[in-house]
Length: 335
Ligand code: KG4
Ligand code: ZN
Image (cartoon, rainbow, N blue to C red; front, side, top):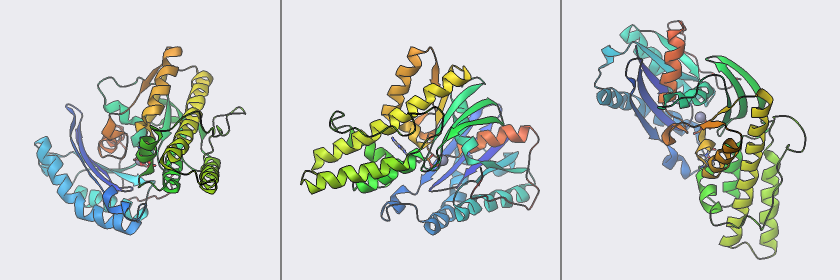
């Protein structure tokens, strides 16, 4: 079976074909980051318009690269949510329109399930069961994964997501959108001993997260340095470092707890923040200590992409799931 995957939930237009015989046949991405950077964040209306402009040419390119034509497709999967409603509707209506024209099944899938199973596209995928840390701009969750569709939420953020916290800290530091990579770059020059931020919710048992307090902490630190006339480039790097250390440390502590609580030895880390190098280093050391293994998607599949949607769609289509013809789904908030 050859499945076209379409991702348009936020600011990346992602397209891929997953083939049950060949694996991932081709994938392509058009990122809108440069377009939104001017506004310091994603502008929903611009996102929808750009998806509309990019999606069909991108589908053509992916089919070319896979050496396929539209008639070779057996099904279509698209991100039905969560995300920006206008952006989701572009992917959903395109998927449904194409599916009707080609007379093939179509299925809307959950964006976070895409992130969750993205490491399955790698050469040595994790076996079930495993613990997953999902860290993106919209989510911070720990999930026990028993198998496809068999998920138990172990903990999640009660306020901001980790990626969102990175983005907000970046703004305070005058860095460009998206903030995560920018904060990480600045933090490299920072002195880890100069400032120490709290590790929220690690002083009590449990697997929930809270990152909004770190925002206040970051702002207070910046204001204090500013008042002292000491907010130079080195000081900004120290703030970035203290912030990154606090987020990473908190994530690592909770992962350790989740592995202990479940007795599992496999940890999947996915979503945009999983690209963070300091997080990866720390988790690698933790895993070494407890003979556990950490699995990541390859770099370009850490952030939003069509491949993860094609993969999840394939698994669910194989299980017999499909949308009712003519009933496209766009679910901005989908637990
Ligand atoms: O998964 P994703 O591409 O989109 C969502 O579904 O949210 O994640 C984007 C998030 C942004 O908040 C971005 O700042 C963050 O991931 N991010 C990072 C890094 N690369 C991306 N955060 C920290 N360090 C990074 N290297
Ligand atoms: Zn995402």
